[in-house]
Image (cartoon, rainbow, N blue to C red; front, side, top):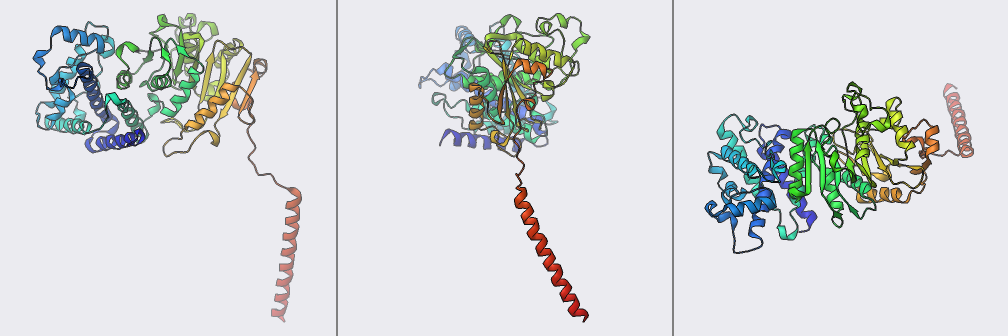
Length: 515
């Protein structure tokens, strides 16, 4: 079975579990329990693999908790970031799940123990609260202990049956793929705006490649609005053959989504010492100012959200916003995220940011910020994407690429919204590998392409009131049918002759009838 076939089979099984066991529980809520079970199994098997270290004579799951020494536990936590006793492993709990009358409370105790095992260690911040949204005592599972246990057992047994392959065969990323599949499908099918925390893989891939273009090494990668970490993980995949010196950084304001992001790092086999995801408001309480600068920044921040803006007089003196001389409007924080990313960007790197199209042509404060960006030659490229690529919105968004190392005073505009740059799909449109490659080729070469790409001198942009809308510079292809007037007139003449002849024939028939 190929990797693709295995992944497809895995996805089908996961979707079956989610639909079979949720019962009266809302699917959007219940995904947390499926994801939690997946995560529990993953870290259990990951930890087991670490303890056994390839020794076939060791079966950690069958060992007694009593043999665990303080030294062994200490060493394991320092390496893996957490500790799981044999009795606490997923395989042992799932085995007796159907007959365990205390399943919900046993699980809670295990999750608390796993989290507390990191207390006082370097991994404490990365481990604390990981299971917070896997609330085994929640009424969402049922009003009685029996109902709770029944649903929890169904989830555990379903996840137990999934074939994730072997660590040594490098199949373990299927856990991550399972996560992404479940999240994206619930977003698409449960009437939720998945775009709030999840950027589709195909779009993430394009953004990661833009930010990483022609960089052989990076110090670290940063997402100021991390969501569930999907953009950072695409950067990881793009970097399989590259060197990431200090790992993955991100900040997320929503607590549940923050937990998902940290879980997602572990699910993709990124150890606690290789990522740093912070909880909090990026605009008002940025967490990584001391870690600046970043060689690669990827971001899909929320579109046109409200923020305090000018109501906080201290913000205009913030070193992220002060250079522009104006704050993003209180009703539209888009450019606040852009200026934040620019401030955190290194002199060699790039930032690739998904943006609402309106910010590129609206007046007022947004126009002044565009002036600052253009006058200082920070805008490398503006890319217009196809509509309906994201969950929860059908708008055709843009990607803004920022750079501090441009060698010319040109800004590139790419119109990738046409049918040559996306594939129609059921829920959302998609960017195929070819579409991504085509866009990256145009981005790299910086050559003008009729009806697709144009590089514009910044002086002309200034003369155009700092309008950065792609349609202002890339001529749209005229798809209207070309009409041959001479041919059309000839056809009309022939038609008129036929009509006249028919009228004459009708008149003759009428005369015969009247006679």
